[in-house]
Length: 448
Image (cartoon, rainbow, N blue to C red; front, side, top):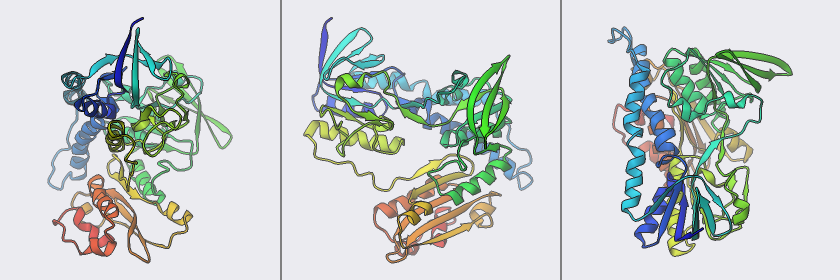
């Protein structure tokens, strides 16, 4: 079998596409491989299509909240029309990305890649050899290892549903569960969320999560916590979800169940052992240059590595670092800084920096500003029933240690706090700023 030779082979067309473009522009002979349509999870199966649908559901939510306050009839949404609108974003993307790479001089392959040795991999029936490899092939739903797991649909399938069921059960208590749950509930679906822990969204401040749980229950979503799913059985056209709570067996009936219990690096069948690439539960093990700790000719960026948070802008930043280190030799270490993160529920939950739990565990000398803000103008004018903030400040320097927001435009306002933290702007300095008024950002001065 003839072997094709390249300088760089990239696996994955999310953050990996950026690496391929930069290497090709620098004169390298580059190939890129993806078993999915070109574009990556965020563009095609995650953040972007989800945000399109959430944006439309916000119109329904706002019309309901402002009913009889100027709005005479609530909005009526069509899932079919929403999905058609979503497709205007996702459908053109793969061919555009493919063509863009081809025009840049990158050889494109469609298929599943597996290593044959440290410098050779196989895709379909072809052998490809390279001096350097970049793994950027993302994540997949984590295996639950329970009977009937195959009856769960994943987030990709949910975002491609032609029609919504009458009932929906989400297994897990993270971003996907709450974002999809809020979206479906507003479309009239009876939603249950089952989470095995005592509190969902464990990486967020628990006081803020408690407020979000109140908003979630007001929406009619049933939250079943401290309950672990043990098996799923199909009976006729319905699913029976068997679970265990405090040593008691319970079961739930539903029309559709969604895997929302976390994701893991998509590397199981890549035969990384043959390439001497070390990996663990979180993904490919890399150093601060995002280089494999065991094979210096392999780099990894995005959700496939064990380094950064599984967020799109993190993968994008890592891709820049990887490309630079590939082309110039290892000279730039990754520095993530303070990364904002959001849950796109309605209201949205946003955070950057430390939670109070972490600040306490680290023994920091901090103070907390916390308040529920439903009565504030920014929430009251929209008749938003649940909103709050929590800001953690260093008692000695007044540096912002953490910011947590729940409410209208929280996903945007959190970026102001991220800029302040990354720029070492103190709470006092931030408080002196004049913000455009009246906006949600102008409330920052009252939070400090």
